[in-house]
Structures are given as structure tokens and as C-alpha cells.
Length: 530
Image (tube, rainbow, N blue to C red; front, side, top):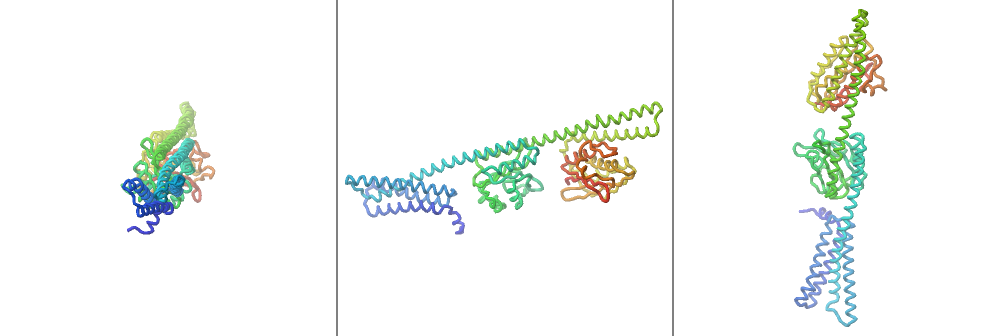
């Protein structure tokens, strides 16, 4: 049995519905009174009693429907207004007709009944006009809504074309959608760690997202956002107050005045880039043309993201090609010029011990340069997109062994290495080889001391390479990862740390630099745990 409070909550327009029902009941009373006080022939009942009675019943039914309908209050009042206006016009016309008949000495059988019947007919016409008026207003409102929506989409598309990065694009899209009059707020999320997490959101959306989580259950994603992210299909909630899928988030979202929502997967050319979530303050907002346009907007955003990523890859490759060109045309060429000069001196018998030492040093440097060129070339070829589970312990042990053979005077201390795998590829060893080489090449002593440590968390692994060298000034800490940056007196290529940053970013990781205590530098490489 339903709760009385629930029944009361369903009576959204009791006054408007009651007014129409009262009009119908009043006319039914007039019909009943006429039947009990007058004798009507068969055709009189058919023509004069049945139609008013049916109209009266119709008013009662319409009044009941109006009381519980989802019409806006203004629309409900307009229905009553048109009905009462029609009834007044009908009754007024009947009065004029009765008076006219009276001037000719003709009396109607029941003037009051004629007035009531005319009022019912006029009210029925008023209802028809109200229906037409509501449809016309609704179409006009839909056109205005569509116009505003298309303007919003046009502005979003413009913002997408001007965005300099994916984060910038997604932020501009969310802000522009929220600024559009039809919508409350918007946010873009992606699947991570078993739930949909936000990438960019407007301020209102960020406040809402602080209160909720959107899990992706195994094989059965819950809610429209999770289903859109998993299935790649648009998900629409017409009314968050009644949709059972919104039970988890209903209270939180209603606090922001949201009545309906739409989750649009961002998919282009078979790749998914997340899901766009848009919220409106009216029920049934995302239907028909609006749904189609926003779905197409999702593809437009995904295409823009793909374009930005492609552009960033090209820029990265151009930077790497420039570094490779510098290495091959400048560094190796300079070293080979020195090697040729001292080789000629050696051939002519003019070389001394210093010349031989310098020649051997340049040969070692060329070998190092060619190794760096190989790693850069491999990084460009592989693109860093294919990652597998790489045993970190094996990689570190191999890199440390190679370093010790190249720098026997250096002391490398290694903490107990945990048995853990990270998401990377075969180029991971080059990351640690370059960090170790960098520590020795920039050291101001003959016997550098280097410590290697690993911290394994549930989701990530941090590898720290610390030295006791002269350190790096704060103003230089970001620049050391640029290609060609080389410290004073360094024997390195100027590309080692650039290669480190390039590879770590390809692994979706991060590399940072900080001061060591009491002196020196610490490089920390954060990688995703496999």
C-alpha cells in the first residue's frame, strides 16, 4: 500500500487540477438537475444531454491528470486559464442568445441548462486551444534550446581547435559547456584503477565529484558514466529523481539542481579517450536532436585529442631528431676530427703520452655517443607505446654491472632490490645507465660514491640514484633534462638526461631531481608497477 506522503508528493498541481475537476463536476450537477426537473424526448437526450455530460466527465478526467502531471506550474496554470476563458466565452455567447430570443418573446426550455452546456463546450474548445498553445510553446522552446545548444557546440568546437594540449582542450570544453545556458556543469573522466576518475571538471562538477565515486564492477558497470566508458555507447538519464540507476548519486546530484544527465564516450578511429558527462537542470533534456549533436560532439573532442597527441608525438620526434642530428653532425664529428689529428701525429711518430690519452678518451667518447644515438633511434622507432612487465631487479643489476666496468673507481652501493616488475620495455636499462654515467661524469672527485635504492608501492615503484658530487643549482634543475645541456667540465654527451626524460615519459612515468644530503644530487624515477 502506498504511503500518504508519496501520494501527496505526486499531486504537483492540486489547485489547477482541482479547478478543472470542479468545473466538470459543476456541469455534471447541472445535467443531473436538468434531468430530474424536466422531461426530455429521446433525441433531446441524445443531442442535449449526452454531449454536455461527456464533456463534464472529460473535465474531471483532465483535472485529475493535470493534478499529477509533470507539467511546469506555468503550463498547468495556462491550461486552466484557457479552459476557463473558453467556458466564459461559451457562457457569454449563450447569454447573448437567450437575451436575443427573449426580445422575440421566445423562452428557452431551460435557459440555465443552456448556459451550462455552452460553458462546457467553450471550456472544451479552451482545452483544445491550450493543447495547441502548449505544443507551439514547446516547439518554440525546443528551437530556442537547440539554438543555444548548437551555439554551445560551435563554441566548444572553436575552443577545441585552439587548445594547446589535451588538458587545455578538456578544460576549455568543460568550461564552455557549463557556460552554455542549457547545462549545469560538465566533466571528463577516464577509466583508472577500477573506476572512472575525473581528468578535467568545472568548479561545480569538482565539488560534486568530491562526494561520489563511480566504480566499474567486473562485467556489470554501474550507472551511466561507467556504462558509457565500458560500452562506448551514449547513456542518457531522463530524470535523476526516478531513475533506479542513479540511486547511488541521487542525493549528491540533486543538491546541484540537476534533473537529467548524458554520458558521451570520447571515441575516434577505434581509440577511446574517456567519457564526457553533461548535466542539465530539466528532465528529459537529452533527447532527439540534442542527443545526436552531443554524441557527435564527443567524436569531435576525441578527434581533437587524437590530433593533439599526434602533434605532440611529432614535436617530440622533431626534438629527438634535432638531438640526434647534433650528436652525429657535431659531437661525433668533432671527436673524429681530434682522433684523426692525433692519429696522424701517431703515424708520423710525433705523438706523446698525452696525445695517446686524449685519443683514447675521444674514442671512448665516440663509443658512448654511438650508444646514445642507438638508444635515441630506438626510442623514436618504438615510440614507447608498447609496454610489458619488466623485472626491475634484472635491469638494475645489468646497468650497475655495465657502469662498474666503465668506471671502476666509482663505489656503487645498492640496497636490497625488491622482486618487482614495472611497465616499460627493453630501453629501461638505458635510463639507469645514463643516470649512473651522469653521476660519474659530473663528479668533482676521482672516486664518486653512488647509492641506488628502490621503494615499491602498490601502484608505482620509485628508483633513486644518489651521488655525493657537487650538486645541481636550483636554477638548473629543470634545464638538465633539455638536450645539449652539459655541466662545466663534463665529459658527457649532453644528451644523457634528455634521453632519460624522453624514455621515462614514454613509460608514463616521471623523473625528478633534488639535492642530496650532505652534498650531491638525487634523481628519482617513478614508474608504474606491473
